[in-house]
Length: 367
Image 1 (cartoon, rainbow, N blue to C red):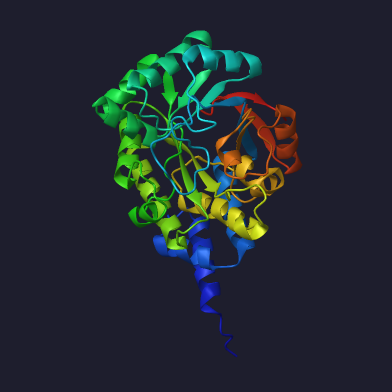
Image 2: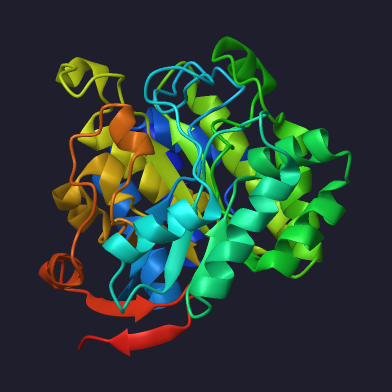
C-alpha cells in the first residue's frame, strides 16, 4: 500500500537534510519556511545549527546607549525618535554635555558605547568626529560602536568626503565598529513606501563593504513587520549573506521587530511571538556565514528572548542603559537590564552566559 506524503512535508524534509549535512539553503527554501506553520521543525533546525557554531554559550555585553542628537533631516515613516530643529524635545548635545550625562549613568563594568542618532544637517561633520573624540579621550577603556551605515552616507554628503575618508576620520577619533541600523528592509520598493529618505540599498551595503575593507567589524539588522512581504525578508538576508561571503566583516545579524508608534497600541499592531521566533530561526538557517544571531530583548521582550535561545539565537545584546529609539516607537520593555538578570535569563534557558567585549572576545564565562 502506497502512502501519499504531502508536498509540504517533502519540502521540509529536504531542508532538514540540507541543514543536517551543512548545505546552503536557497531563496526557495527560505520562502517555504516563511510560508510554513511548522515553527517547531524550523526552530529545531536553527537550534542544531547554533549548537554546531556556538555550543551552549550565549553572549552579552555591558553596554550603554548614547544619542548625541535627535534632530534629523529624514522623515522615515516608522520613526518616532526624530525631531525637527527647534521642535519641542529636540536636542543636540556637545561633547562636554554627553560626558556629563555618561558620568551620571555609567558604571565601571561598561565596555561599549552604542552610539546612534539623527541626521542633523545643522552641525558640520566635524561635530560628529569631535563627539567620538571627546568620549574616547575621557573613557579610553570603553569601545566606541558608533553610527549606522545611513549616518556614514549622511556624513559623506555633508562633508564632501568619500565613505572611506569619512570612516578613516572617525577611526582616528576612536571609532572601532559600526552599528547595524539603517538597513530596515533592503528593498527599494519598501524604502519608497516607508519614506526611508536616507541611504538606499546599494549605499547601505557599500558603506559596510568599505568599513570591512578598512578592517572594521560591523553589525547589521533587519527591521521587519510592516509593509514588506516575506519574500522581501529573504531577499534582505541573501544580500547580506552575499556581502558576508565577500568580506566576512559582519559579526552578528539582528532581526528587529517593528514597534507601533504608541505603547498603548493593541496587540494587533504588534508582531506575533510566532513571527518573532520565526524571524530569528530563519535568519540562523539562511545566514550560514554569520557566527551570531541576536535576540533583541528591547523589541521582543525578555521571556521571548529566553525562548529564542533554543531557536537559533546566541546573543542577547546587553545591559543597554537608557535605550530610547524603540521606546520612542512604543516598546513596552525595560530601557535596560542588569547583568544579573541577563545571566538569570540565559541560565533559565539551559545555556551558558558569556560576557563578551565588542568583538566577541570572552571576558567571563558564568558556568
